[in-house]
Image (cartoon, rainbow, N blue to C red):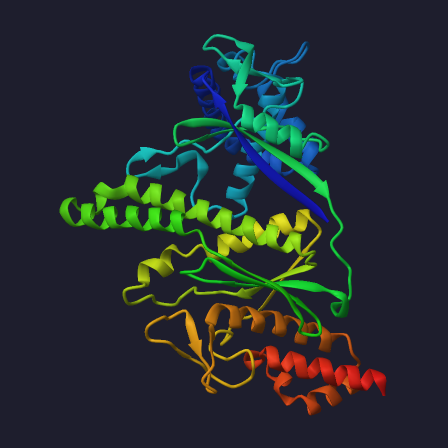
Length: 438
């Protein structure tokens, strides 16, 4: 399996040549769009992407013995060849998308509120032609306003140490210049080939994760026979307190000055929320790695179309459940772990011991009161049920249909996946052991 990872390093200083490089690249895109759009009928008739690209390049680039139809070289003199080709390839893709109906509006005449919208393009720095690395020194070919010259860029020591420690043995793809929040970054991409675990379900150790709003995540390491080897509560209290403080400031400021006055506050709150999601994913991976987990199991959380009401509406809106799962999935695949998801229905509503539905303690909502009077952490009970549902599904997949029918007859609860709990896995495990012994 191929895993592509990205890492941004901030470029210190040199903002003027970086800005000029990005501006002239985007201006070249704007210049080329109507040219390629006007020639598209002839270009689209050419078979093969490489032949089509070569024909388009002949239209804009002059060589000895052949003059181009359009004056791109005059408009953008001395532009590095690899950058020119990258821009041309980008424009061909954009125009092709427009003509095949993948884009809603024409690229050559995009309008928004009466203003032209410039094409979004980030220049690529190809090795040797525009990017050069000498030990810890990095050089980029940047536009000075009149010419393209090599300039050394300064990177943070922490970024250099991270790249040296984690990516020194992996070949990096050509970096891309990115601008975010008035800062410039080099976005590196690394492609690695990994082999995911191929253990059978009966041999696996899974990390069952229950994502929550108040407690960021509750994790349990579980084996196929129901043995719980480790548990961990993940909660970043200081970070959440900071986020709630910012949201309170948003609420007060908005009530006085209107919604348009809090855009900066919302952007800051969003960045804080994303950081909490990254930290949560990192903590889940660390726990799974410490306990040699083969699979990380999540609930399939799909709240699309659901209306959020009540005092917790803002908390639900800010809940970065999908971001946590996405980041965890990427990091898990890099380590050879698999990701699985199970039905989320009533994992918290049913007690893990099979005693039925639970009620919440009115004084402490995180405590679940079982029908037999037992009190237990609701999220921890849910994590047991998540791991149990995964193993029940995977164990029943591996047995023949006749044997599966016998198991379902002896443990009827496993037939309905939306109400399976940890106790059902224990029963199923015991029955399978009896059948194997017989």
